[in-house]
Length: 200
Image (cartoon, rainbow, N blue to C red; front, top):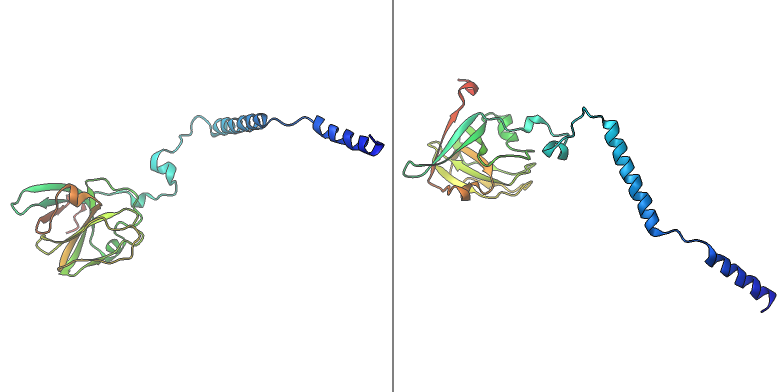
């Protein structure tokens, strides 16, 4: 073997002789660092601070202005005058409340909804702009008779959901409500504002 080849051989041998870093050791060190960081953050947060839970944890910026406020009740009644279901409602009866509707809401219970009250009876058109929850929309005429139902409206859609006949009242509830309680065109709604909310 020539002197040149001998040097080359030694250099290769030297490379092979260098110790390799064990990949498991890297993972172990990384894991210890993560656990240590977690424990330090828990220690610094102090025992008196409560961690947010539920929706607060998901969305800490959420404003309480979008929490449900019961302002009345709506009863759904069949053609024979039998009660099908009763729900609690917020009432929208001025232009600002009507325009806002259920926009930005991320929570609505199964027996909660919104009642829109208009000054007169005419064809109505609603959309789902800025509305997170899929809804059922129930349109009723001035006597409370249900004239149009739109089920499972699409969140954020700008499609117009129109009443087939003139309507003075609209009830919005969670999608699936109409099917669950067998609400039909020809049924009626009756409503009452909570006494403490009455302004008349």
